Image (tube, rainbow, N blue to C red):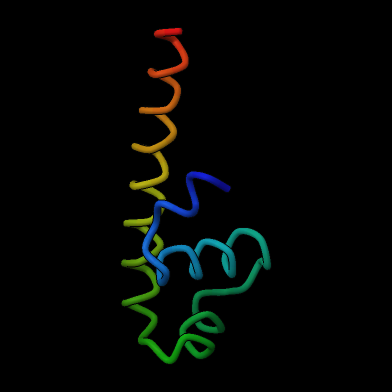
Length: 64
């Protein structure tokens, strides 16, 4: 949850709807009133940001 809080509100919403609620991109786009292309972009950026956040946290734990 800490990593999710570091995303933008839109990125977080896409991640929750896609990966937790299991919605399709078209449904997410409709719910967020955005084009499907915007949802795909938000999803891509959110996953990349989560990867960076989690890798950084993993490196910090290794320093302890």
